[in-house]
Length: 354
Image (cartoon, rainbow, N blue to C red; front, top):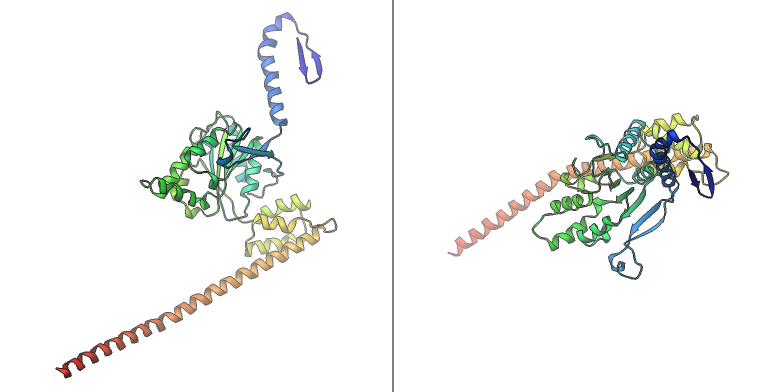
């Protein structure tokens, strides 16, 4: 038997009594390992959907792609370690086809929601790097109807993550669709849309659909309930543990005298992982970890002061409103009395004429 590895050839000699073992389980094992190596070494891609107006030209495609290269991994992700382990275990179970009620089900649909700039994109990139999947970035606002959506999903490949960004801000699309189908209200239209995106994208084809949103309160609960969204991942503001991960990623430091001040400020104010990463990232070769940490502390102090001012402005506005309310009531009462006096005066004049 001769086994070829690229341009090199190796000769495998075995005893006749082992023929069944070699031609059976061993060859299958080699082929499976070779397929896994090829999959891990392949160039992964980031796809974006093209406008349907351009689908019908010569050699036109529904998706355009570039090489997917994103440094984010679960090791570098600013997130609670126990939560990261939970997500990684669920992804592995999904990839192996072992669905659980608490993890990803057959549809493989995930809802990520948070305030803006709290790390949804790095989370999606970490998932793609962990699974070695392609990423399809679906711009929902460019899709005219469910038929186009279905065609796009059909042409997505296996072993991929389809990302629906800012679905909470895509309600205008649903409104346009509602104009064509008046018999359904907005919430039902959204639910049907999600259902068609998720159904059939199962564990056998290893497709995951991620719905990313910033304002979950804008959506009806039917849209993100369990069953339509198999797993909910909530991203939040930075805590001290997350800061330490980012400090290690960007500065290569595990401990520093400035950490105590950062911890104190993070207990008093909020900062997103994106803002924290921006402050920790050296702007030049001359900027060391000391300067970066001092810059972060200044940014945290400014955020704390801005929050204090906003709180005071809200309190002043509420106090002014509370003070103005009795005056407004009194003014309205005087106006009614004046109108009543005018009405009574008119009646007396009418009697005198008579």
